Amino acid sequence: MPAFDHDLILKLDPADHGALLAARIAERDATIVANDHNRRHLRAVAKDGAGAKSATDAAAAKATSLATATTHETAFATTVAAVKAKHAATDLVAAGEGHDIAQGAWVMESAPRLSGLAPIEDHRVVLTDAQCDAFVASYRVGTRASFEAMDLRRQIEAYRQAHPALFAGPGEPPPVDPTYEALKAALDAKQQAVGDAHAAQAAVLADAFKAAGEDPGAWTYWRAEFATGEIVLGHQPQPTDQKEEG
Image (cartoon, rainbow, N blue to C red; front, side):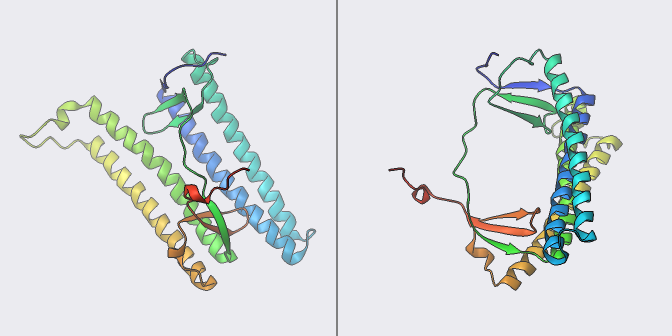
């Protein structure tokens, strides 16, 4: 299978772009829910025992969510295969690839991207069930809104390109275009939703850190671990943090 010497940008048909976006949003949401049910299962087993209804219900809900995620992942992969076939790129070997929502394209990279050192995880803060519920609820809303905001930015730019007369240089103010204004209003709403979700998550973290006696400023890295209901704390490493092999 041949490699290639420059990145390939496969422009997506609107239907393919829409299918990829919908599948990715649905898969991410189902995965988040599955991880949350895993947390519920672990805690139910610890509290009530593995055979308790609370534990078996959580395990069943997790399995259902994972099946949903797999369905959408399969739909995503099927659409990607169709896109590559349309562009005669089925046999190409990419170093990395993915859906560029902002461009409405499938991008195939010819060489791996450079990345920094992986963060070093030092400590975990356990969230209460109520904190987990609040964090996950806001995270689901924010994740969906973030994807949709990226797509609205793409739509706005495409509309600008298709209607250059509306966005000419200085002079008379351009006429009000209802479609363009509606797109901007929709983007503002999605950005507000993302901001509200981040604020809700920050409030949960502040409560958790305070209860645990943690100073947020002492850590340069954090990650939500939905599958266990914990916040992972750590720092971004410097080269001197790496151990030499000897």
